[in-house]
Length: 300
Ligand SMILES: O=C1C[C@@H](O)[C@H](O)[C@@H](O)C1=O
Image (cartoon, rainbow, N blue to C red):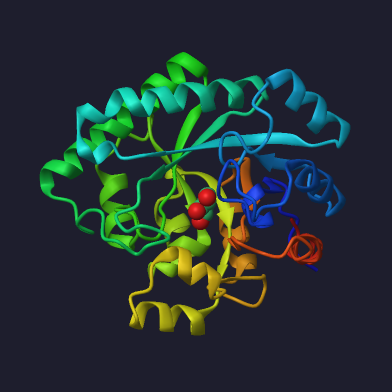
């Protein structure tokens, strides 16, 4: 009998329906996502890319309430390692997303660092390693973001390590955490991205427990990943090859991750995200139903 994971709040996100962009002909309409995520047995969702779901808070509230759904977070992308000149554009994006996130009753803003390699074209956009000066811009910029988002919108930022960004490997994630103030900046640990970049999620939860503010549950297919690493394939094409797979077929094992998170003794969102852009419209629902059932078997 699995341990009851009563501090874990499971949800899902547009990402698990193949949604990466606000508007794209290869994606399912937002009404279908909302209908199916509720049908699959989830009660918490994220906003996904801003503009995919309605951006009018009253309208979105009506749509989620009708389906007994609640919103756990919104998401932004930013390149604060480039220095203070990035602030105005970042804040302009943050203002829109954070206002909607707050108005939907959520408490978290997921912050994803910008990509150093283009998802679609594989073009190298920036060096994969930051200079010492850029690390300084990144950590001070994220602290400023954490402070201003909290003061202005009442939300906590949770920074999301991600493949093909500068916060990816164990070394980079630990460096980021060691260089930022825990009162201002914590982590959205994405178990799939962390495994993709060679990290061990259970170890990170056990050693940096007080910095884990939010979870994305995701698994990697180790065979596809070996090929991706060997051939230096960028993240977008890697997803098309199925590198992020349906639990429990991949790694890391999610039961031990959830048990380690439960032991932290705090309430934590654990939002399922199986990247699959682009996908056939009938593919996500059966996977979502099976994944929800699997997580229940783990106690969540
Ligand atoms: O949180 C996420 C948002 C997606 O758009 C992203 O690319 C995905 O991999 C992810 O983890």
